[in-house]
Length: 106
Image 1 (cartoon, helix red, strand yellow):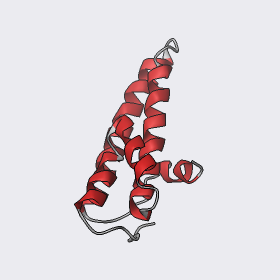
Image 2 (cartoon, rainbow, N blue to C red):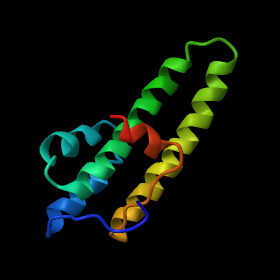
Image 3 (cartoon, rainbow, N blue to C red):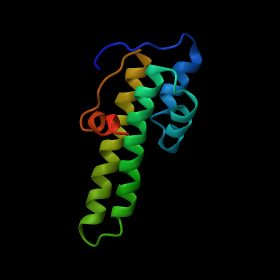
């Protein structure tokens, strides 16, 4: 949705959308702002990124490839989280690559 979604007026909506990209804090907007389409969009993408991060941590237990997978994943998750926060600052709803498809299934 490279465009605008309906969001409630006020600073609370924007703060909740930014929280969506801060690790486990993504669960707060997901639970408490179901009625705000804009926050829900960002919260779902944040949950998808958080799940990927948890899988990356679990991947550390894989011998050999685990560390490489973890390093790559953390780099990509950090970059995509920053892109998501920039989207919120510009009041946009950018579909993050790979993450958006997973987030629609949540």
